[in-house]
Image 1: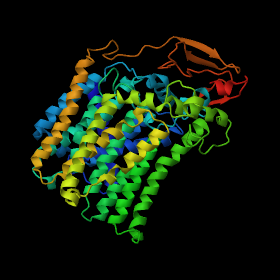
Image 2: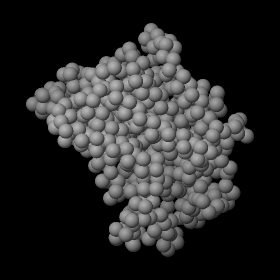
Image 3: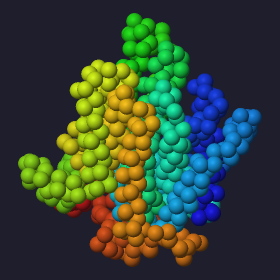
Image 4: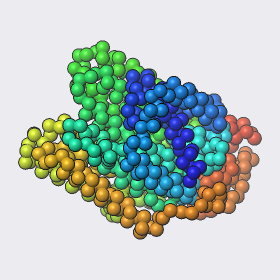
Length: 585
């Protein structure tokens, strides 16, 4: 646990140091404690952009980490006169330090657990191993299609895969991000408790307080934070975007320059989300559209071309920084810009055949509706909706609880509007803030309706509903409304404690591997393709590679070949040497 905590501290300083560079460029100063939170996430997001470029030429190994550490150290040293007093001032915030200490002990203990998530063993670890071993490899889709999914967060995981964490950075990668968000929620909850008037309260404090149960519930269960799941990164980044959006919406005092800085800050994390996973695209685009519309209205409309131009230039530069390398990486690994979608096919020798890609898309859409169903039956009717809904409604922590909180919050908001009319909405926030969330839910339902893709949407909806209710009942005393917010938080915390007891998810003792629990490797068999290429294949019905040496694939095909014989770092091609092989994978 000490190894985990020390590593998290050093990594927090690393990304914060990098983020301080971004804060300086945006015109922010490290003059309040919460700026550390901003600098961490900005540094983390910009690290993804830098690693996308780095990986085009080099493996994501110790060299990348050392280079970033040097930049971060220089930045921290330059900010020492402001940073050191900020850190020393923490000793006066005893309540926060106590709660943070308990949280850190709990989270560091969760980090010892054995990775148990199927997707981590199926593809995530293998994808990180490729990034850690070689520069970007062409045609990984031909070896194993899931390796070509262009998730930039794997680069972060590979960056941490060094020193004592070599081969097991999943013990610290997701846990660090989740712990940072939990620390911010704790800080927000205490700030809200100390606030004596609504005029001094931040909307983001209320929102962050109400989503705290989501973070805690994410750390319950076997291997809850010991994984490389891309959905966890999307969850946290989606909630981060809403926290910063609420700050942007509340700060409407007329300072256009400050508003522009907030827009740029949001642009960085939204564009980072675009590169992490395609399931973020609709939500991110909706949030970006909402931010731009609000900014234009506040800046005087489209007639103010000068201000609009000054803002659009850095946003365009940030977009190129993230999207340029991301699209190139997609082409290198699969032959498509947005694999597994048939967008932007490039005629390279490793590009996946269109018929196989179409088959893969239909199978993905089917499995999110009915696992292992027949695409011809599932996708041609709506018969899947009933069993699908029965399945998701039984999930309390990801569906039933946030949905119930959302409905109760909206009922209270509607009651205030009926009683006091427009007076209940004078705070400046209304139902229109739900537009990006509802758009995402609609797109999710008609495309890939797997509950894991919208957990943050449902919990964000619950928090926003109670935020609206709290702001609309303005004739009720502020302290009573704060108490109601804490009551809602208490419901989530009570369910969190119930799950710990029900699942017997108590603190674990030290594991056999330097205190950690490692997942055993499945038995391995060697499969030889028609070209003589030897592939490692898990000899198990669960089709998971875990840390089997490269190249590993759960689904070997005779037609796979090394583009340069004997040198797998130069990628893979595919030739259909058997009838029906393409459709049969």
